Image (tube, rainbow, N blue to C red; front, side):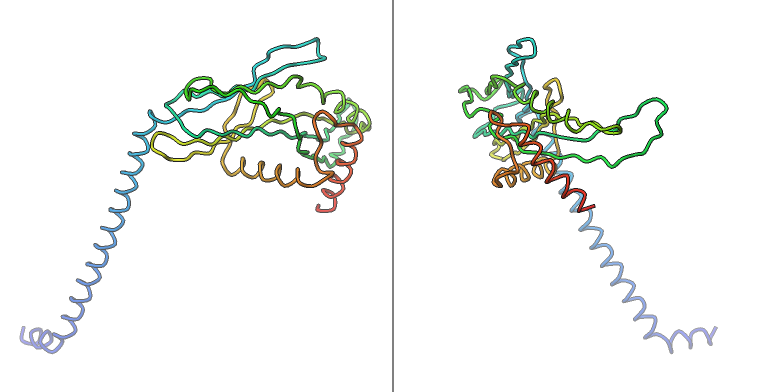
Length: 255
């Protein structure tokens, strides 16, 4: 017993140091835990605040309404933008379009599949959307309409272009892909930016901000470069051929 007491007495400084260090480390750990808990509490509070705002936020959607069709020779459509949520302010929109040209693999019965390399090109389409837009003085319900007199003007040009590029194992497809960017402020003075793409029948599909910004940036950059875009009312097959040959060639080089 005396030996133990002597041992403890002789090593008192070490035990005190160990105890002090342990207490200090425990205090640091508790402090870190308190900070984590505080951060999580703030995050939960912020998320709760955002969730509580949802019923009072705008809810934007868009679609293309078919107004008139003339046996495939003319098709008038209107881009309709609607707000089914709460009020909004300082609304702006920017619709834009690309011509998408892409090679398609042809497979016939008995033919051995060669898995050819398939290329695709996106070409900015200028003046597809007219500059005249009807905007109402309300900010709920249908408040914006943009009418396109004929959405089929490019069909013949794309079909003629595609016909020249058909081979035994490839064909060419072409379509117009339409997008929409909207910006507005809600009743809490917070700014919002949203992007939409459109399905074949004109229904809008929300896009991620990153994807939308990347598409819009590419559109704006290419429309500043002569020869990298086509004008809707003036486009010819030769315009598509020139851009396709240049961009498809660059695509092969980069590979």
